[in-house]
Image (cartoon, rainbow, N blue to C red; front, side, top):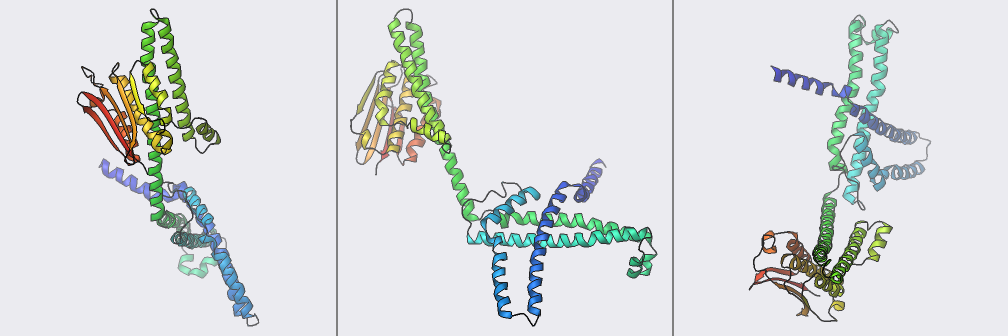
Length: 426
């Protein structure tokens, strides 16, 4: 019984919602606006019909005037600004979600313009019906109520003697006339809401473009996340190791402790420059962000010697094999991504195999850039070893190489941890 009573209450609320909902009022305002526009079109058309009906009217001149007028008043529904205004109005007055009707992007296609014109015509047609009903129902209901109280009863006597003798019938008819307005408005609102997406929504081409733009934004976010992970992660690793070394040496070897502190300062400055660059990319649309990006250019293989020096100051013996002219002859994107691969591999070597020597080789061979970072595995690998932890470092390196159509191979080889990346050139 309780479930049945609840169902009845929900049904009653649904049936009375057009009378109590503010959405009906908003839709009514939107429809009346369409009705007013439809009235203007009707008056204009009626005026030309009357002129053509007059035999004294010069037909050719009126025909040319009618043609020019039709072009002028018929072009707005096809214009992109009008479609944008309609989308904004539909969101406001018909409560359509922005995900259903996103802001238009780019120039509309021919099909999009015709769909916008169809929506304009539907809006005016339904608006004309609701406005006409308003202009008929309100005066009719007012006259019926006045007649029920004995004012101007001749109106209803003309409608029928049986109705004229039934006062309750007058009032019932007045109520029905007034109730027809909100329910008719609710019905028109439902039709418009269901037609909004197919007529005003983006077409297939626009949806594909939006999906591609969304994928580009996700790829850019992933790229910035990799930048932060590699640069800040490397700086934190060097800082942690150098801070531990300084703590051990501060009492026995103050000079070595000062060198460790200087290395911490250098790593912090480098990380701040990288962070400034990434934040500049995030604010690429802002003048300050663009200036920030210019102040801190992206790292490249030209910065590799400084990176190796940081690792050496952290206590890792690093051998760098890099031809002096290699970095300058590479595309900027390839040089940058190769630098980040070496940086992440060095960071992992310093973190997971401290004290072990590392070899970094960078060479160009057979139209490709080859990068190899090798370090002996620790005698007793911990659970934090890259081969076991499956962290973000290897995944980030793989994404960097894949974006440039390269190949990455990372893993234990003959007692050593080897990271090999190959970037095609040309």
